[in-house]
Length: 293
Image (cartoon, rainbow, N blue to C red; front, side):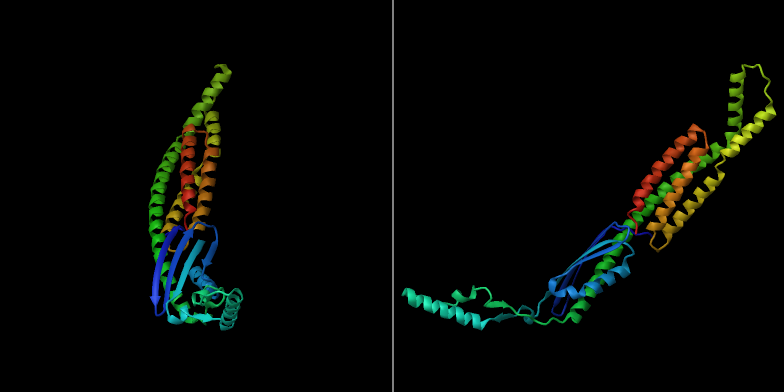
């Protein structure tokens, strides 16, 4: 079954001291385009994440926002720059003595000085974190795939309805094309009579021959057979689990080629009107095909 390229999913997973939240957004794109946004400390995981997403999605633009929070006490550790603190304290003491101030130096005077207290550089267990991220990403990808499949089912139903309508119109064109020979014969006879004003005797055999020639030049049986084949192939692709977007886009181009030929070959106004409708319906299909993986 076909899949839509547009979808959204979110997954949360906590294992041990690691909390992971992943949001995936999928958009239409001719090619595979993966964008991953990670906290600075975990940028080394980006290529593994991209590879995991790439293995699940054939094409489309995928934006992955990943939040990682380590809840262990070591993850929130801080360092104290004692050298800077002592130097700042001595400076405050000298300032009090020189200005003859009557005040005490409190801890508050030190903790707000930039650089005295700073986050500790804790070595992270990236391998353990990568396992949690991978498991969370698998869940997010599964949810994204489910949504893309549901959207694909709606698109497939719409395609089927339009294909049935196209089949009906092609059937009417086939019936009208079968009546072209007598129509050409009557039209030729009327034109000759109008030009000669009845002064020349009309040879029925010659009229029939010319009419047959025109009908042969206007024969659209091959185009109708190919259009029927395209419809069956379209349905076969819809039922397959393989990525279908590029194949269906190619078929739409083939449909358009057959419809153009049918319109140019036949001189029937009714057929021309039906071809205009077919091309209009085909354009709606083409727009929807752009949403398929």
